[in-house]
Length: 134
Image (cartoon, rainbow, N blue to C red; front, side, top):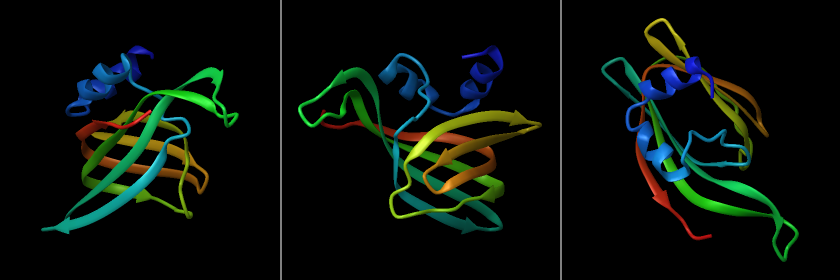
């Protein structure tokens, strides 16, 4: 992770929960977007994602799939959303998630099975990280 990427990850409130779990900030490759919640209150919008993710080894399991380690659910919230472009399909599978500082905002770019997406928000928070079964 470059210094620029590290600086923006450090701006994410509670990012240390994710870093402690994995030992680093993951790319979210092959994660699934399980739930999306949109809220608008007093002209400020919030988007919350529940992401099921894990990291993978190069070993295959009995079903021929790559073995997972450290599977978890991460609840990621974008507060005071300034701009967004989102599209969804039946079960969006994430290919990659990247963050960038743009002025005072944090931009989140992610590609998925449904296409490319962007959320620009004043603040990003990891609300919760829950370990799940392997």
